[in-house]
Length: 177
Length: 177
DNA sequence: CGACTTGGTTTTTTTATTGAACCTGCGTTA
DNA sequence: TAACGCAGGTTCAATAAAAAAACCAAGTCG
Image (cartoon, rainbow over all chains, first blue to last red; front, side, top):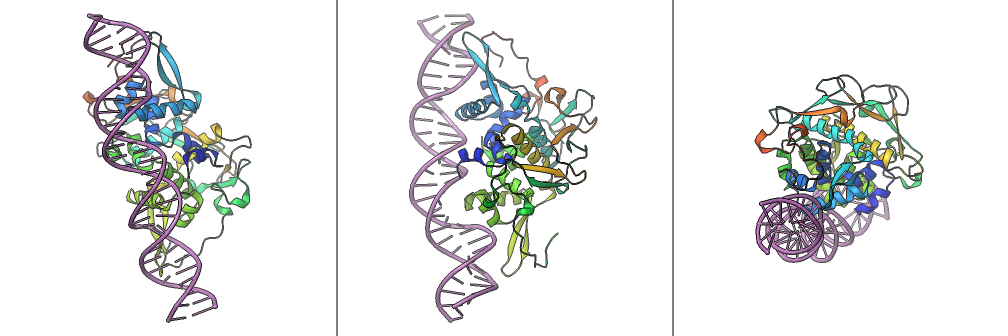
């Protein structure tokens, strides 16, 4: 499958991945949230090659995640700033940071601490249900077809699990653990 | 920079990206949360080539995100199941889904709806501060060096924005170094 | 004038991905 | 018993993408 077909899939993960699903892009966005804005600064901090950086920034601008705004004239120079669409990626970045803090931190602990200005405390991000406020766990969530789902007969990539065909029963001695 | 160096960076984003920062990997994980578990089923749903699928599954198992468990003997066959470490990726996946729902949905609306079993309602995921419960916004968060930060003189990739050198005011032609 | 800065592009080499075919162990059917 | 099918891969040639290094251009500085 080609990547330009991804954004046409009837799946929000596929569509999002078509925009940010690239290693360098995610690292660029991390730096954006740390107030990095200029080509040379991205390049120095990330250690990415210049052609790749240029191509990723170009794509993020095309997708309206970053905006290229002039910060001086003569010589005319631009910096890259998060748009609202880009700022909305914050939960994704924070979720990634938090998973890394929990599962990938070295013995010395996490590299960064996050302080919530409103309450003053060092915090972790927690994902909750918008309706009842309880923290989310995968087993507490059921998935249903939405209005933008692909047509049912195709068994599309984002069809809910409970509409797919029955799995063969487990016959192993070491089944379900 | 090579990807095997990423996991050694003093940055939780870089470390997480070294595990899941690949387009196919993210789509595989999406399907894992939809209860897909077998090679053939991943392959049919994703349209990924078999060598890539095999290499990604192998890496996810190596990183303890998935576990390869037998579901039958004679012939011995395995399926791939999320470990706890893998289940903990749920907020990342949900954040990705939600951004796609908001910013990439077509006219017909979102492809999938999520129902919270505990409260019964269709919901959106919301990321809040673990300490005060308020929704997070990037401007309400300050970043500080944690115990696992790299040494300060190197100006590491995850040094907090407010410890880096002051940006030069607009209209200057020679930026800081 | 000549050097330097920012923000790139070009070119060559190396690496990763695709697409198609093939392999293995075992069970099933004729 | 042979032939076929299935799940879960591996192998191989062709193609695409990324890395590394050099180059370019507009403009300013000394």
